[in-house]
Amino acid sequence: MSFAKTMAKAGYRIAVFELAQAALTPPGPRPILLGMDWVPVLSLTAIFAGMAVGLIRTVKKGRRRWMVTLIPLVVAVLALRWASYRQAWAELGVAAVAAAVIGLGWWFAYGRRLPPPTDDNIRVWTKEDPF
Image 1 (cartoon, rainbow, N blue to C red):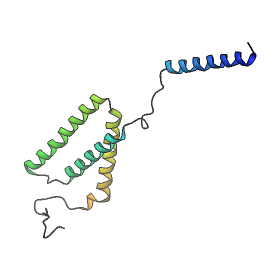
Image 2 (cartoon, rainbow, N blue to C red; image 1 turned 120 degrees about the horizontal axis):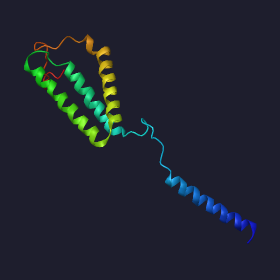
Image 3 (cartoon, rainbow, N blue to C red; image 1 turned 180 degrees about the vertical axis):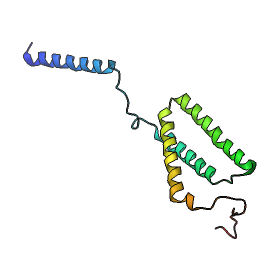
Image 4 (spheres, rainbow, N blue to C red; image 1 turned 120 degrees about the vertical axis):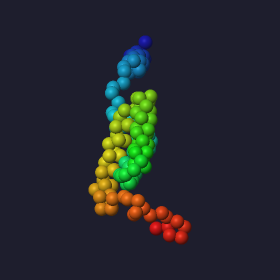
């Protein structure tokens, strides 16, 4: 057998051994932010931020405020159950932090200059007077 054939066989065996070794080696830890499913993160962020702004802008008296507070509670329970089922705690955490940043950003940029919501300053949009 020639030297070239021997090396080719040896090289082939080394390559097969390396592939087998790579297949048996467990993968390293996956990077948290790069390995996330971003569709649920963006969806949860939009839901949480919308609820936060809606909760800030509701009238703060009477039973309507109490009922509006129940909606985020139900959504929070559903989000926790979803994260528990899918083991998506990182996605839920990133969405909650992003929604908090959006809510605080909205409040500091625009929301604190608005008058407090009361029953008197609610304006209903109609076809004749849309804005």
